[in-house]
Image (cartoon, rainbow, N blue to C red):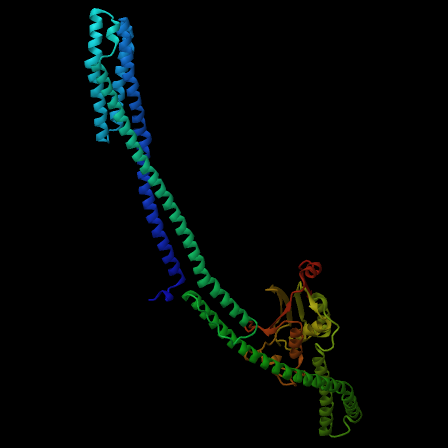
Length: 529
């Protein structure tokens, strides 16, 4: 695998590994150098320099011993030897301390011991014999004058101290030179580490510029070109594998969007074509509605007039010539009168069906309790004749057209009274419950009922389940009821689970909550009988 195919992460890891290795090497070298520097510094400061000071002190103690001895030789007082004895004690302590300080330097230890031997010889050969002779014979000024032998021994001891001093100074200078050298090495290592960090930063910046910034800028430029509308432009990237993969994914997205855009444009064309067709159909529907309105006008005026004339003259013939003609003629005249009357009812029902939703005064708040009472009042004669009972629980206030809702309840109550059971008095129960933002209203009767297979057929216009001789009517009442419910945004159906009689259910939307709360009375149950 060539370095050109390395991922950006792998290149950064490689760069960081090289930098980390160099910095670790610098750190190890700096640690070793710093340890040596610290050791040499401690040796200079804590051992050689104090030892050098001790060498100076040894010379002063030797001088004290000489001065104190001369004083004693002149005075003979034993108190004058206190300084001699103290200097001798100090000398021993200084020698012991110096040996401790230079214990790691055998040559210096030997030089210290040579000083001790030389000062001991000076005392044994010069001072001690003179002190003993003065104690024996008393002070003598001539005895205080140094002899050549005494001077030679003293100079020898002094030279040994000078030699120790020079050796300690030379050794201290050597170690101090090493300290300066290791300090310079530490500085060089720190400079090298700084250079490594700077070079690594520059290399990382160049790497990011070459492998990230520039490819990302180029990729962004190509993406903007596509975003500007050039959806066929292929997006490429010459950066690391990650950016190449990103560019490939973006180009895949571009191709997919381009394909979907093509589908959308095609769909838009189809929608525009469909809209044009819908506009043509709407225009055709408008023309057809005008024709239907014209037909309704003709049906309500032009057809009604000759139909009334036919019915009127047929009835006139029936009244004037009833019993004067034969039985078959009376039968024919009856057929003509009945057909004319049925045609009038049929035309009136068709007109009522066509007017639903077309001729409107707008929706208002309608109290269904009043609507049911008014609808029931239309059947007072039938209720008295059959002993029918119409019961309804507290019904809500809905938003709709009161005449249409009155026609709805009139059709349902009228059906219940028309298709009553011969063995029991009719009973109609109107109830209501709220279900998921709708009012579900039920109209239940105890009549002859409807078979389950006909529950959908009864809502079709002109569909009858019984002969007109048995149950009169045009077969359009439930179709009108369905159209009224759907016009108010609801639905109507027959509950197939109800076995005795018929149970109609229909829904109406719940009006605005504020209006509902203001118009809703306390729940009671009313009966119209």
